Length: 359
Image (tube, rainbow, N blue to C red; front, side, top):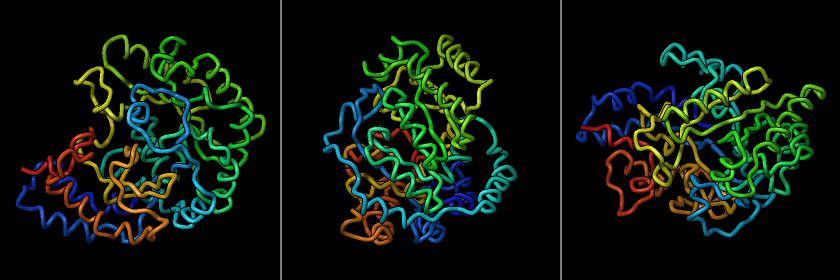
């Protein structure tokens, strides 16, 4: 989840920045205003429960760069972080969604990439990082603990790593949203994207079985088939339509997503990014934190190999890290553009940074 209050309160200055109405001379004023608007209590965007993975996805930094030891997050650390999660009340979300529609002309109920971000990501704790959640041997008890604490949860998986039995147990344990990464519609293509252990028809059969079981058992988990848009040529656009048509009459939330990590893998430099961030800038330094399986605190979901570590919750409190010197320096870099040489944010990230909008 992310700080919906900051998103709303910072919107006026964000529009000035994104519309090119502020300049490099305003750096100090921007820093001061954003600092006044952000909460001193951090919002946890996601917790990486494991970084074990048996996929070899061409667009994932893990496949090429990650040298971190494969681990599962410790039970004590996981529960400690859950105690830092502040969920939103139903009326808070409804107010936020109403504000979105009135002020940004966007309906959170829209079934799309942005609709998913604002209707699901905004309110759910994400339980994936650079690993496959179903390879977490403690997954079910983690979900049960989240349910006990009334924390809505979401994670994405490659269906090849999932058994129907464990998926049903996850749904029964209270998983709010289960997303399936399906980036092709045939065996050869899915293996070329996700690796030789990926499969297409078997994955589809599993999802169909889950749809059936969900109805029979009256389970509430939202099932989300998702395809990444790697290109915008005619063949790709036809594939996207075929994908959406395939799922349109089923009890799922199916959408096509813009590609992340285009600095790493890119077929078409002119491919349009349809995320709401396209006309804005990266807000992660102000809206949320990511907790890695070893307790490291990083600014976003794209830190695969500890490129930017802002602290560790085994050594300092989450609040101390969020309000500490390293985080403040990172926020300043995003505003001023003065990154150290080869910094991840400036050299290996496809998100627009705040300073890029300043004249």
